[in-house]
Length: 113
Length: 111
Image (cartoon, rainbow over all chains, first blue to last red; front, side, top):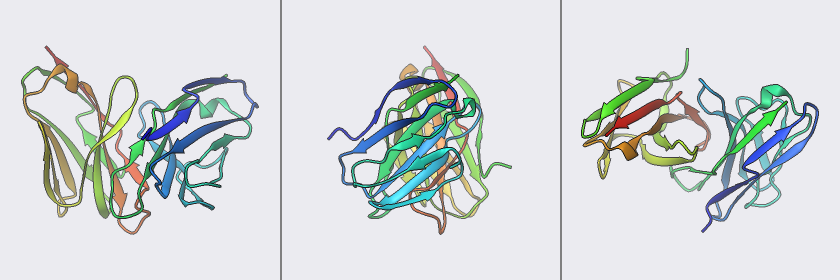
């Protein structure tokens, strides 16, 4: 199993550009989520999904869109990038069957200039 | 006030020392995670616990639900233990996957 994969690893955007951060998992996990990690702050939940076709907002959803058309994939879209979205983004997944551990992707470091 | 507080923020130890990292939380929880983030940035789950104590190798995690407190202990610390250790909780009644994170404890173990 590849686990949770994220692409790209690094990205530089100009203000106003759009892009999609990709996340995929091959463990057939129902639950997937996106977090951002900023210096001096804990990871914060952006959006999450409890299964294909079901998404919901987390703590900091503004400026981000998500969709979940398949169990495997959970892309995060930045519609119009802003410098405040400069961060490291982590995707995670877990089985919905009980209190199982979360598996994290390697992260995407995004800089918006 | 943060719902999950960790202490200390930074910790430097000599190889072989016994290390304790503390986590206090202010919400009702259904489970607590201890995570490790290496300098390269990857995050791995060390423990998930809802009561008592768990041990894996040189790592021990304990939780006291009544006191809303958890500790992560590392025995016989080694430079390879240098990492950021993160406490995260699942709020009781919340989605099982939605974690609330502490800010992390940066551990540096000197040879």
